[in-house]
Length: 278
Image (cartoon, rainbow, N blue to C red; front, top):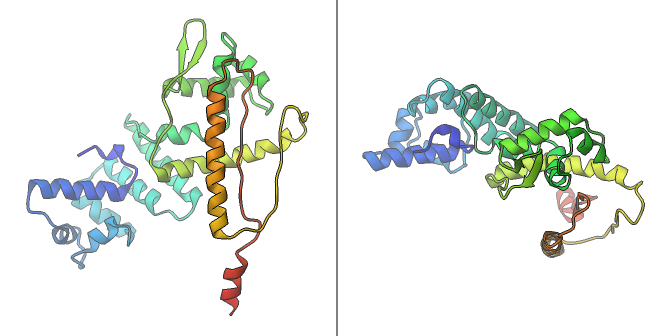
């Protein structure tokens, strides 16, 4: 079984613990529930299936039953908070606790780089910009960004990108784009990307003042059904893939651009609202 630090889903960790015990002996969900002190013989399976949550007391019981102690127990507590948090901010706080526990014990959380990468708009920008400016200083790169940033912030971004393998540094302070991609579980990716989308949406506003031949803004307000919404999303996904393919063919890159594809509701569902009032 993998070390607990390699998990971000506490339910998956509990399932793997159960399967490991079952493989080595006659272990059942009834036994698992019994050693954790729950009266319901199927409670642990219900929790692992995501149909129930663990209380603070339940977390301590389950952790002790699985033999967790010290930093592993700390990590498990934070992992449960992360998995059961209802708001994006609460999930981020819990994940930061997981990273903090891992850092103290010099262990790397696999999805830590995912959150760090999307924590600031500078990271994806610097990752694309650095290879275009061979031999440039962090200050030179900072001056090329439309949005205000300092040489120190660019330096910190470069350090993170090279440390995490997202950029390669060669002789003469020349950077190359690495093949490494930033990946994580779907839940972690959605959470990490949400913050990046907010930042990039904010950066789009001052870009309105750029010359029209450097930026393209357009929009349409329309009424749609759920079915039509799904069809539009499919078209946007296909459009995004085609644009990525076009950019990948470019052999003479001059600038770093950001493409935001935004489709969001401006009103609540009028039919659902009508049903609620009936």
